[in-house]
View 1 (cartoon, helix red, strand yellow):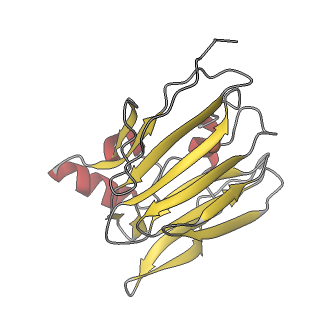
View 2 (cartoon, rainbow, N blue to C red):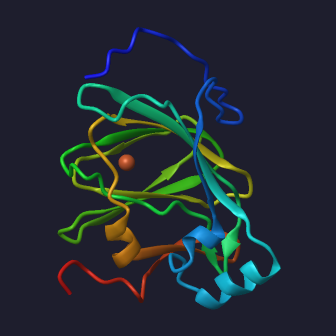
Length: 194
Ligand SMILES: [Fe+2]
């Protein structure tokens, strides 16, 4: 295991920036083609310009057993068609590893699903501590008009399985109806093995 000496840094809970943390991900709409249910709306938006959907500032700590990783995620406000901006979502490669989220700014939903077909969602705002149990895939969604920002902590050896969600999606979508978030069934969702 990589030897890391004790240290401290600073989290700006207004803008989500962690001092000294590199930007790990800057995910644009073009990089998420196929993940929003309205393909026409996706393509129409991209004809005008690409847009930054979310960004992740990570600790840069080693992804190894024994270390604890952390990051902040900033999901910018907006919709693609009627579907709110969201992260790609993932299972952990090691399915038996959980995660903790702490809401810092804005309004969001945490969507969760298991490979056995269970589905859950947790509303998040500043001060919310949300627990992602082992075996639950997780995706976050900005359902507000300002950036949704949260802090996450997870085990160093958990790993990320994005491919399963890229293929299957989530059983539910979070869409805007009369200005408010609503969960609807995902017509394109394919359960495991189907
Ligand atoms: Fe995770």
